[in-house]
Length: 323
Image 1 (cartoon, rainbow, N blue to C red):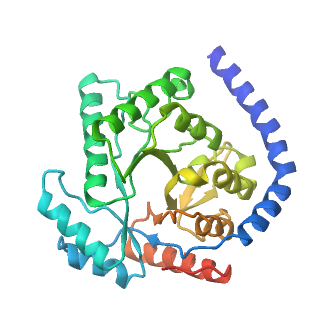
Image 2: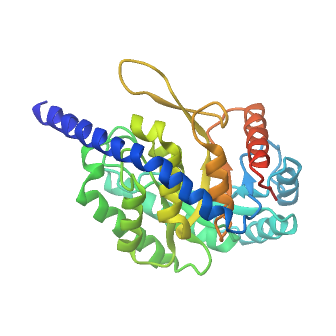
């Protein structure tokens, strides 16, 4: 208990100090990056998200994405062994100009159970191989957790050198097993496990030291303090300034603060939270590699439709295009 109190005091002290720095730098960072992005050629944003079409036919799936205005998609579920379906999905989505953004393999690469950990490593390795075979931009997972109660939950060691080294080793194993030529592997950043900041993401990219390792951006995952919530424009700009050339795919959601006696940030659909979407969309559009933007974590087709239309409207008001 005493150790926990000390950790919390240290965290609060560091958060307040960091928050002051973010507040001072926020206006300058925003002004500089807006000036810089204005000089770049902005690409049409490829938005995507889950669809609710009741079909497994690749042609119908690709067409359903286009009917919703999507030009990016999550990779449809299929086994790596089904070469015929992989070819059919690749051809259908290419024919309709819908890029496959990512193969998600959401599991704990640091599971406490050695057998489960081995199975998860194999699953993610197969996910990267599938991304390579089908032409998806990346395979993505979180780095994992040492928690024994939740595959993604917090644990004190998830911010430790031991966690960092294990995550680097896993990324190398996955990439070296597949040796992809076009797909990439990446960890999604989290607020309570490494990489938990743009700086830690850059450090991990350099430590993995593989061209096939990149970055996945979900800025809402990084908001773990009032300073980052209030100054999320500066956080967004920092992410793109430091990680831009490595970003493979991005997630689109929003964040609100439920006022309680302690911090409780909650995911909501885009437009119902505080994330600076005009800045987010401008920075996505300025990426030379054209990273897709993928809606997630909503429940119904109606919620996705509202989120989609909000992003379209916000982007167009900012002078951006989608295609």
